[in-house]
Length: 300
Image (tube, rainbow, N blue to C red):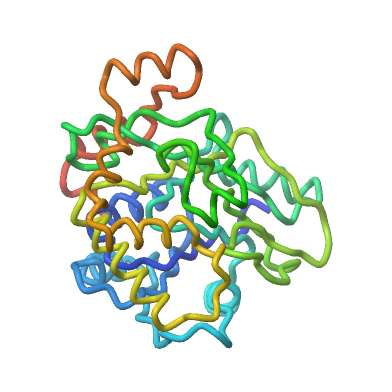
């Protein structure tokens, strides 16, 4: 069990502002390989991935797919992690999601899961925010975690009339799966089906989600998704509802207002911390500070 191979799979798209931190954070957790299928990034994402590929712990390739009607990209990438890299466990997440173990290290948690015949792990994902005037490096500046998010209704998804700014809306969980039991992912890869074993949650595991960073990055992502939907018209209206909402706001010239609504003033943050909606969580920001202080020769 101690030598089980852990592979993270992800699909970056124009996320050069955060992907270096994403890769370094997860390699520091002890993952064996990060396998990425790049969705035709036009920024420096691919160059950053290239700089890591020399270590042998990052394997990436550009996608050849634009129309996903007859494709199952998540399953294909997970199976490639198994077949090319011998993955025993596969973590599926996005580049703006950072897995944060607490207490035991990740490998020990997965050893415990295997001993208890747990083959699928659901990991809650919490949005991170900060102050608007501090728009710098997101992993450094976003230290307020939305600990008690709001669950929107299906009707609100379709209408786009959500009860709070998006940052307060519950983000669906992500998964870790035992590959010798893997069958398929559910919608958006937020759940997974296995052939045996149990599905469980571990309180020691959570993802920190950094969806809102700089405005230009946000707007570029919205436009990329709009282009995706132009090609992939087969998805139902509820699929990617928050992106569809942002696309409409962008078309209406209201995306900047939407962006600014995702941040808090310090006074508002204090109120939300007092009532338990938010907590101060410096897990990632402390890591950034400590890593920045290391000698350059020790960095990847």
